[in-house]
Amino acid sequence: MKNRVIIVEGIPGSGKSTCAKKLEELLREKGIKVRLYNEGMAHPVDMAWHAYLTVDEYRALLDQYPQYEKTIKAHTQIEEGYVTIAYTQLEIDWSDRNLVSTLESHEVYDGRVDRETFEKLHLKRWSHFKMAEDEVAIFECAFLQNQISELMGVHQMPKEYINHYLVQLLQGISQYKPLLIYLTQKEVEETIMHVAKERVSTDKSKRGDWIDMIIRYVEESNYGKTHHLKGVDGVIQFYKDRKAIEIEFLNQMMEQHLDLTEVEILINDDYNWGKLNDRLKEIICNRY
Image (cartoon, rainbow, N blue to C red; front, side, top):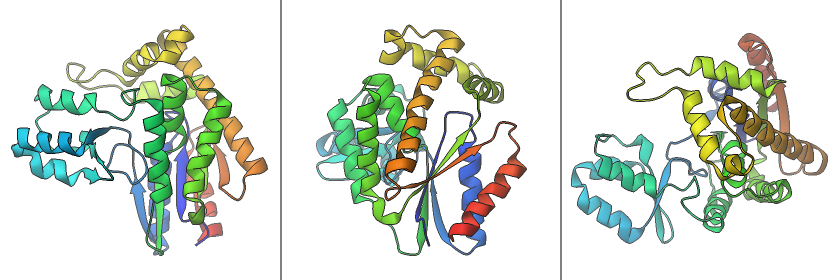
């Protein structure tokens, strides 16, 4: 097998989840063992929606909430001197705000750990990643989206710094010859407005619309405050800026670092999933 790790990326609404699921289906049809890792699940390399605790804090949490011990342990990874919990996957009573607030306060993302710790945790995860010889792993959102959103949005690091860090992450899995599939539409505004129309809450008393949550995220981010980003226009500008970093990185990979990753950029302006699926079939047939 040519590429044993497939990384699926793109801004929100570009079709990452649909693409990742189709890739999983195509690989299974060829009789290949495949693991699809979505954002938020107990993940081998990414820590979005993960709480980061010391071992003592973890033990105290189990003592305080014995009724949730089984589900907490099921979504926990114990590493060298610390513990991570995929807390959005827990089967718990989410009205228990004490537990939820505790886990959220230990989130790895959104600046709740310092940048050095954030980078160290992820570099370690990527360099320690192991998989069976007959498997393919699919990572959705684990690379460009989550890493750049944190380093750009929270820590406001320059693109040169971000590019260097991303190269380091890829070096950690270079033995698996990763394939990076990037989904895009030509206009960022088109993509954002498309997903905003799709992701509408059916019960706004429990959860707001996607676009309202993203507006709040962008406005409250350090990047949003520095660049005075407001409302839908601010969201569109945020993702234009993020996408510019992503495209520059992809070009750098294609020009300078073919030994680290292959890149496929798939333009899906008309959201023609039949056409996109045919392209994915071609990619899989050429490599497996």
